[in-house]
Length: 463
Image: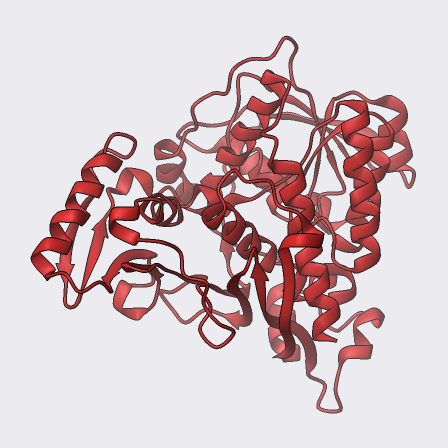
């Protein structure tokens, strides 16, 4: 059945909370290609699919064709799109055309009303969806992870090869490259007079550490997020070691070896890896999914105490071009009041460490610090740091620095703190520019392959 969903006058609950950030974070438009980009959304089981459409883009046609099975996941997706269409400030004008037949994938490939497919949903299906779209001659913008087991990675490599042969753009959504503290961490690490050289590190003290804490229950666009039950099944969502670590591995590559082409066989060595469970009670499961009981496919993970055991935690240590790095992900059920997902990151240089902290002392907001390691005086080091900050002000106007105990805090204007949801627009703009230019940086595809090689090898090592 095909249904046209047009903007209505009903303002959904929770829109108001998002209006201010929507106004502040309106993205600049990417260059317009020769023809319009026409989006298709395939089986949007994860809320990231809707965040691609939180803003409008001149290059993108407002009509979006959605092909998906009927059900709660589709309805949640449409509600979020409608909330963007009906918010008071900077409303979008998306027109969703929906097909919900059981042959939704085949129907999309046959009809082909668009030229770019957005895929964000059940990760057990994702790699096969990607390959089917590439075989059909469609560009793909996919949420991470694009592969959650080694067999998926084998198929993904074939998809990249075929995409190159067909001149198609296959790209994953790496939002954390648009987070301002991470961007400035990278920039500061490229000032040798301040940072020195990146250390090689050891397995006990890696040169680069990325740690991330996430939560099963949280709010998105001002509303409690309803998780699909399969999100708690690692066979469908993927274990932490191949899911959120995708972001962390991407940042290690992007910050430490900027714009360098990496080689999976030569540059990556997994040193150690481990996984452990998060316990989810029946009440917590109901709160997150609104379901009264566990579906049958989750019962394999339910203990005698009726508590669900989810392998939502994992970490691994590896070497990338001889540099030791650590990626660690923890999934708790819910953040303490007033807090949210958190991130810790350190890059160790011969002259200074550059650190992102997001704990209680930082009011749970990511904060960037520089810690001196060289033997120069504090006064001399601060002078060098301020000279570096002056250089960065050319691209990031208004950033400053202040002494904070035995380190220095980088002061970042609020205009750069647009939030995680707005980062999806930044990635989409990046992808639209690839389409407009007809090319992607030469390092992007090989480094995506290295990234998924790393996570799936860590998955094997952890078992």
